[in-house]
Image (cartoon, rainbow, N blue to C red; front, side, top):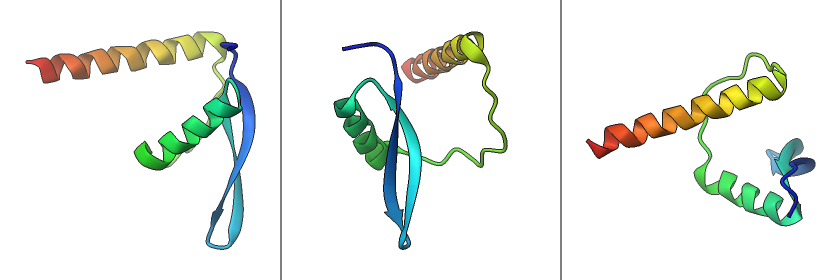
Length: 79
């Protein structure tokens, strides 16, 4: 399996309308797994007011911050 994420166009029905969105995944099977995960674990974190493409540096920084937050949360629960 390739490690490269590719954009897949997905859609769903809401109040009689078809809504399209992009889901990044490695292949069709992963798209299906991601959509199932959205249906069972998704939460609303807030309204998105802007989107900035920060490139590879920004993506790496974002992943590092997410990992640090996760470790901090696990550390607190372990006390």
